[in-house]
Length: 179
Image (tube, rainbow, N blue to C red; front, side):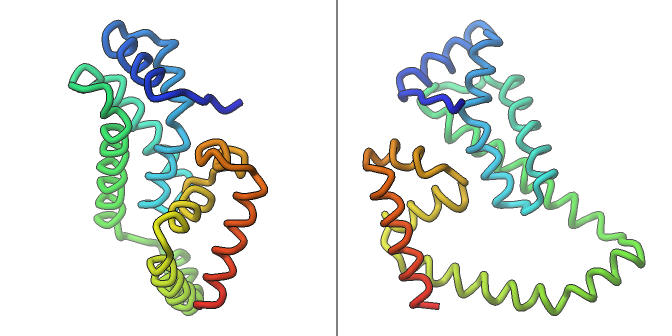
């Protein structure tokens, strides 16, 4: 079950964990922020296992460095910075470990043509998404990048689920027309 917390409740939980190391508070933070942190890692790494590892590492860093957080109101931006930095670090490691086997090289060469087509499509899609309005981009971001459910989005935007579905459909239609 997904936890829904107000900003004040989040701040209280962060404060409890920061001040006393309350494991129950940490578990609530973990459950509440897991998808957010994972989506950041996945955005950078595009690999589920690596993104999961970075997510776990992020929460380990949070548990070790929570006392360094000066203002609990900035917890979400603080944890996103940790996730982003760990993801970038993971990318650097991946870049430096470029030794690949012959089998991996042959798979890469076979899929290279498909990858270039895919990259071209992704580039076009990103350009089209940039032309959308802020509300439309935010809707796309919540649904497809953060992988939120329609019901979650509806609750966050304080609109009905059918309104979310209709807006998503309209945005998808706009994207199809533009691409």
